[in-house]
Image (cartoon, rainbow, N blue to C red; front, side, top):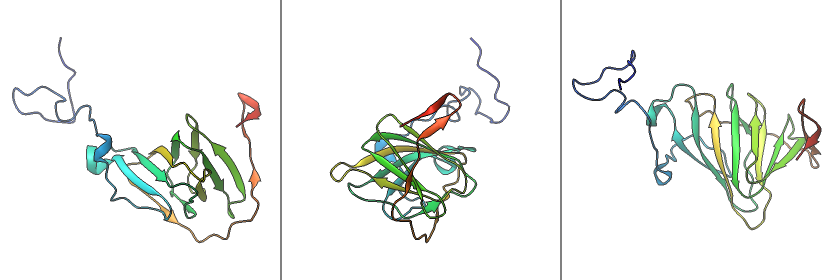
Length: 167
């Protein structure tokens, strides 16, 4: 069976196409903690330009200790997706972090570009572990000095497919 022609990469004579430019596996114990961070969280890169040559996305992990919260921040023009692996995430967002929603294991969280937000570990005893993906290979984190409202408004997830809202 012939291999697809690779228009973008040259390979040494006799070496199979895609050997060094194909699939990459980044072991979970080999993530890069040298990324822009926000107070209150431990962010580590798995997939980015520097590590694997990713052009249009960034992926990694974020851990928030029990009963802890991050500082307010946004990610510039990037879209973010957070997948909750373990624990309970409480998200606050808005100009004064006036809105809130929670997510648990198996839930996905979408954060649009430039939206000020804060991640909170809603558990006083369990660590919050998440997988994070962004729409560019750069790790952008713009920390903000926001005075949050005391009681944020709870917002249910509502979309055209789920008009009654979900958790």
